[in-house]
Image: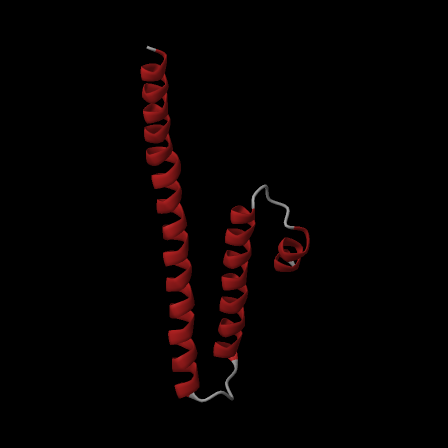
Length: 97
């Protein structure tokens, strides 16, 4: 239900925030479906092993994507933008002097 709500209404402020939330909800939904497969006793063990690897792959992908987003946000907003603004201010001060 939450996935449908996020895709339909996109309630967050930016496209990036909506993308991250939709991606995270999609990962949770896929993980829940794979977990249901584990509960089915008629599925062979080899298929369950494969689904386990797929589940770990989705979890790892989710972690990597979220880490990239966090590091990118830290670099761009916390480090790069203040340096660019400081450079622009010193450039403007030189121009007026």
